[in-house]
Image 1 (cartoon, rainbow, N blue to C red):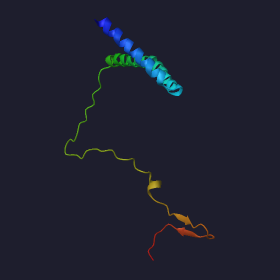
Image 2 (image 1 turned 180 degrees about the vertical axis):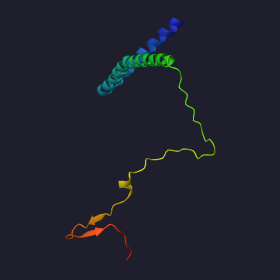
Image 3 (image 1 turned 45 degrees about the vertical axis):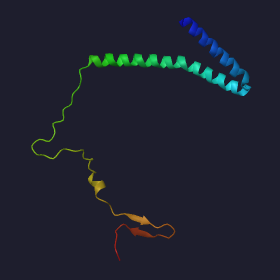
Image 4 (image 1 turned 135 degrees about the vertical axis):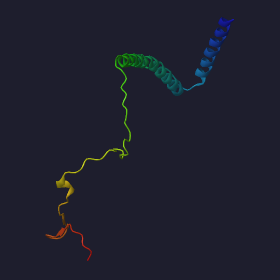
Length: 120
């Protein structure tokens, strides 16, 4: 019974392919053939990628099994002290103390403006 159903299904698919193939233009047929060939070429490549990925996972699992797990415990807030958050590094004194700046005005001869702000 199963062989009969499979034979009927194969005959239906072949007949459908012949009917559709006779009605398609040459350009449409070229597109369909290109898609079928592309899918056919991608199947072995996908299987190869899956094979390599599964081998890599098993090597990583073996590597992880040989090392004990590392557990880091953060002590938290002790003795009412403020939590020690990340502080950006302090600038050296030479950079933190601003030197007086001078600005040159473009378009004027020898015009230099000191960097001191004054509200006149």
